[in-house]
Length: 175
Image 1 (spheres, rainbow, N blue to C red):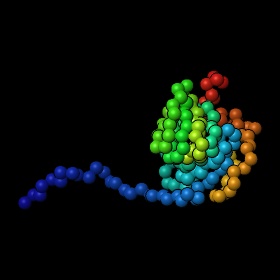
Image 2 (image 1 turned 180 degrees about the horizontal axis):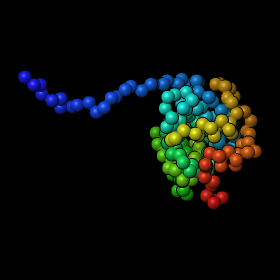
Image 3 (image 1 turned 120 degrees about the vertical axis):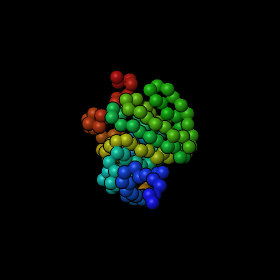
Image 4 (image 1 turned 180 degrees about the vertical axis):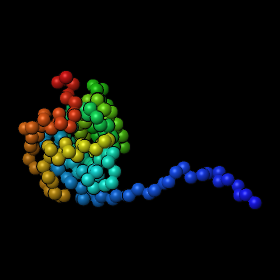
């Protein structure tokens, strides 16, 4: 006697991927130059996981800190704000936000983020494809967990070269 056909046949071979856990002080952490200040911790990159389509980490910005206006020619950037309040400008449109806000920056749009609150702003970021970590490595200074924030410092002298190499868009005011 023939058996009934499976109403849910397999759709190809499915394999489990490799999971990765990175603790709060296990990623590479870097102090950020003016006007951002604060620090970034890079948690996941193709260098420490088997996936090559994204990188991720956190950024902590003190009150008044700001990510300068810029854009990305070949990347999308996803940001989830889990503490703090601020403003974001996307192609000239400014929006206020608070904890729980998710922001997706598309390719070829300019944007900036500013902490307008009186406490640290904390954001989780994901960059598709990866590469934002290379920016942080190029402009930041290594940070140890628990270390006091250093005196303000400027971006490196070759920042324009780094931006061009990473295919960043210039601020709108620079064309």
